[in-house]
Length: 199
Image (tube, rainbow, N blue to C red; front, side, top):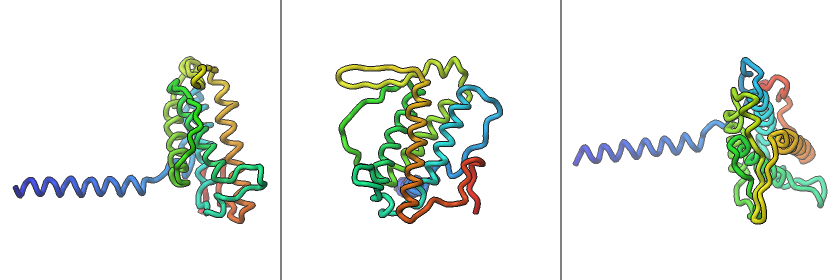
C-alpha cells in the first residue's frame, strides 16, 4: 500500500512539473537559428521561414490590449485580426510540406492572443524543420492544396513562396507599424539582418 501511494505521488509531481514546463515553455525564434552549412533548396526555404519566425516573434512581443485593438482606419483590420490572419497563413505554410489541404472554413477563431502567438511560432518552427536538408527534387513534390466542399485545387510550391510566406512577412510589417502607431514600438535592438537582438 505504501509503495502504491509513493508511486501515485511520484506521478503526480511528474505531471505537475510537466504542466508547469508546458506553460513556461520557451517559444521559438527569440533569435534566428544558426545557418545550415549548405544551400539546398529545403535549407533556403527553411531560412525564409526562420526569418519570418524571428520577425513575428519580436513584432508580437509585449503587445498590450490597446495595441491589439488598434486599427489605422475603420476599414482596416485591427492588430489582433492581422495576427489571426498570420496564424491562418502559418497553417498553410505548415500544411504544404506535408501535402495536407488547406480547408476553407467560415468558423471564427476562439483563441487568445497568447495562444495565437504560440501556435503561429510553433507552426513556423515545424514547417522549417520539415524543409531542413531537403533536395530540390523533394521540394518539387510539395503542393499547395485548397479544399472546399465544391472542389480541390492544387498548386506547385512556387505559389507558397510568393503567396503565404511573402504575405505573412508583409503582414508582420503591418503589425510593427500598427504597434508603433499605438505607442508601443518594437524593441529597437532587433536586428533582422543578424537575426539576434541586443540587450
